Image (cartoon, rainbow, N blue to C red; front, side):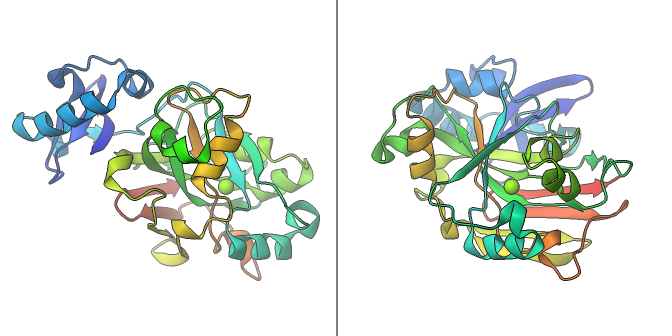
Length: 292
Ligand code: MG
């Protein structure tokens, strides 16, 4: 099931996409009066989800061309948790760019976070902040959305607490990321987190999902991998993070990016004003954003 946040005029709401993608059925038609996606997820149970799935196909919805699809989670309740260097080929290209910032042994996953004042919608523009950024880069990532408050979860239980999956572009200012040693600032500028176009519930995929993941700049293929190639897999990450730390319903975990980012080329291919970045993951959709 594909869950979206959409706008119709000035009204913003959660909806379910019909299987053929033609209509969005407002969640409140289906007995889910959540004010936003985080509330919708927190209220959801397996039983309710199955009922929603059945009823969505029976209801009259709104034609998709009459709404604007926004980021499924526009204002994440907390920081977005990110994994650094989680595909081997990306580890190699990042270390070639800056061994001091990205090289070395990593026996444990690298965790960091992004501040997201407002997620950029699937067709939204990204401010490149070119007054302070000289090396703007893209990173297509599979993002896991947690479905219920989770603490001390074993790897075997990990997918029980997953709600679904979306696409996240972990936009990065390489000059800020390397200059400040800590990656937080260089990844947290306004507009640096496009998310969307929908959340696909976990029942649509295997555990863990093995999906083609790609990015393009101005139509040119840059990243081309599969989510099965992560170094630290989803169950390990959820289990490890939840030891002593509650992962609240609605938490977003961005699982790292494969090789082919701008800093991986020699010379690097950083983004310029007017460039269009397209991120796509099999079974989820396309997230396409132009750089202002
Ligand atoms: Mg990243």
